[in-house]
Amino acid sequence: MNTGHRSRRLAATVLAGALAGAGLTVAAAPAAHAAASEVVAKLPISSFSALAVDNVHQKVFVADSNVGYYQNSGTIAVYNFAGERLTTLTTAQSHVSGLAVSDDGDKLYVGQRERVEAFDTTTYQRTHVAYASTDYCGRELAQSGGQVYLTTPYAYYTSDCPVAHTNLDAVVNGGLTRTGWNDYGDLLLESGPGDRMLMGQPRNAKAADPFLTVFDTSNGSLVRNAARRFADAAGNGALNVKDLAFSADGGKVAVADASAGTRLLNTSDLSDAATGYPPLPAGATASAVAFSGDGKYVARGAAATGSVPDLLVQPADPADSTPPLEFVFEGSLDGDRVVPRGTEWSADGSRLFTVTTDRAGSQYWLHVIQPPAVQYDARFTGGVTHSPAGAVAGEPLAVRGTLEVDGPAPAEPLKVKATRTDATGTRDVGTATVRADGSFTVLDEPDAVGKATYTLSFLGDLTHRPAADVTHTVDVGKAASSITLTAPAEATLDGVTITGTFGAQGKALPERATLKVERTDRQGSGVLSSVTVAADGTFTVHDIPRERREVTYTVSWPGDDLHEGSSAAATVFVRR
Image 1 (cartoon, rainbow, N blue to C red):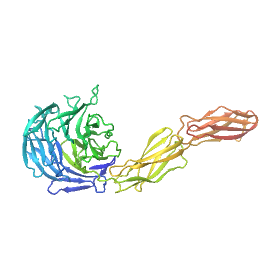
Image 2 (cartoon, rainbow, N blue to C red):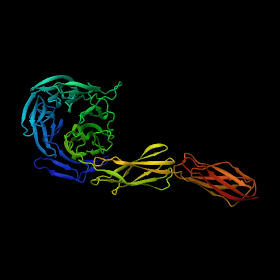
Image 3 (cartoon, rainbow, N blue to C red):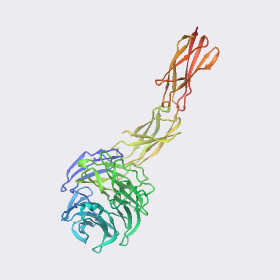
Image 4 (cartoon, one colour):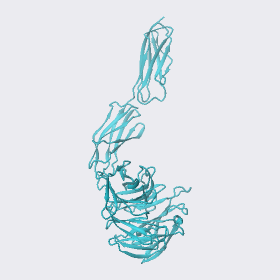
C-alpha cells in the first residue's frame, strides 16, 4: 500500500500475519507516518454491491452481490473498525445487492433477490422485513425519515440490466409499496441529514441526460424537491454519476462524476457551489465520494493507474487549500482502484473505509484509514535572505529561508511555494524542498528591472496547519555588458582594422547588438558606420584614417531595458 502527502508516496514496510480467528492478511502503514495510519484487509468476496457502517457498534459491512444466476447465494463480510473480520453472513440462494443500517445501529437491512431482511448487528439473528418484487440486476437500499426505500430493476436478461426499468419502492407496515417514481438504469440512493434522500440516475442507453434529485422523506412519503439534468443545449456535460453524498450539515451535495470529476452542488436547488473542488489528478476518473460525519474531510475515490492517486482525503471546505493526503493503490496488497460507491466514513470522522478492486474486478480489499486527529503549527523563522546581494535581471538568484514545524518529523520533505511580483505582474516561481533542518532555497531568474517581491507560502498538509506567508523584496538591476578591442599600435593611411568582442550577461539579447563607432583625431570627432556583432560575439571595425598621428576609436553600446551600456576605446598611431 502506498500513501503520501500531495504527489509523494510512502511505501508500507510492515506486513502483519493472519489476524487471530479472522483469516485475514493485513498490511499496516509504519507508525512513523504521522499523517494517517492505514490497515488493509483482503475481502472474502468476488464481487461488490454495497458498503455500510454501524457507528453504534463500530462495525463495517461489505456485501458481495453475486448476481447473474437466481440460485446464487450472497455474502456479507463483517469487520470492526480495526479491520478485523468478525464474521461472514450468508444469504442462501439469494444474492445481496443493498445494505442500510438503521438509525439506532441495531439493524442491518439487506436487499435480496425477492425480499428485504434485517440482521441484528450484535447477534446477527435474521428477521424477515418484507417481500419485494424480484430483483434481477442488483438493488439499492436506503433508510431515510424512518422508512426503508429500495430500488427494483427489472430485466429479462442480465445483459439488459444497464437499461432496466427501475421502480423506487418503500417498505410500509411490513409490505412493499410502489412510490410511483421510476426510470431506466440502476438508480442510486443516498440518505442524508434532515430527512433527505438523493436519487441519481447513471448514464445509460435510455438516459442520455440523466437526472439527480433530492427527496424530502420527513412525512413517510416522498416529496421531490430540487432536481437537475446537466447536459447543455448541445447535449454536452451530461451526468455520469458513480457515487453521491450529502455534506455533514446537509447543505451540499457531492457527486462523483466519471466525466466531470467531483461536482459540488447546493442541496437547495442543485446549482453548482460557488467554490468547487479542484480537478482530480490527470489520469484519475471519479468513482466515489463521501463526507466525514464531523464535517472536516471529504474523501474522493477514483480509478487510476500507475502512480496517479486513487484516493484523496482533504478538507471538506473547498476554500481550504490544504493539500490532500493522497493514496496510490497498486497490485496484490492494495487493489488498483476505488470501486464505485466504495467509500464511507465513521460518524465521528475518525475512520475512512474504502473498498478497492483489481483491474479484473474479481478481488477486493477493505482499507481502514485514520486521518490525523490533530494538526500542528508551522511558521517561517529567522528572516529571508538572498544571494548574490546585487541581483540582476536574467541571472540566477537564490532566496533562502527557514520553515519550522511542530509535532513529529514529517515522513516526507515539506514544500514551500514561492511567487514573484514585479513590474510585469505576479507569477509562480515554483516550489522548494524543505531540508531536515528546516532550511530551503528558492531558485529564480528575475526578468524585470526594479523591485521584485517574493512571497513564500507553506500551504500545510493534513498534519500541519498553513504558515503565515512571508515576503522578501529584492532590488533587481540591469545586467552588465562589456566590449573589448584589439587594435594595432600603428597603421598607415591605407587603412586601420580593429577587432573586438561584445558580451552581455543575464538574459540573452532579442537580436544581435549593433555597436556605435566613433573616430577622434586632430580635426575632431565623427561617427563612423556602425557594426553588428556576430553570433559568436565578435566584430570588426574597418576605417580609412583622414590624417596622420594619433587616432582614437571608441566603440559603444547604449544598453537596453535589462542591460547596462558599455564602451571601449583604442588609439592607433597613423603614418603615411
